View (cartoon, rainbow, N blue to C red):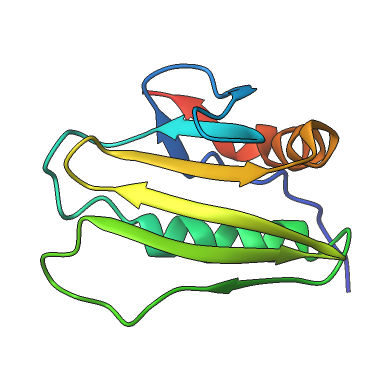
Length: 121
């Protein structure tokens, strides 16, 4: 049987190139501006599941989020990636996903790994 290798398809559509910058409170953040403001159909939870699946190829990764609420807006959780605990925050009203860490290197590693999945909308 012949195996074929497929490159990951872009599944995270963003409005601007993801950047890593100082977080306003502390540490660093990787921000993905995706979807339209107040669009509750933006699949943040599915994106996070896919991100964990991709990162799991490098180190054990999992996502911890509170239970789903149909009108959820400000949602906080944790992405575990190897020995790192990455803060998750997404907001439907502004339509962005933020991953935060004290280590910019960890966020760069995540961004590099996700790059094939991200496409400008």
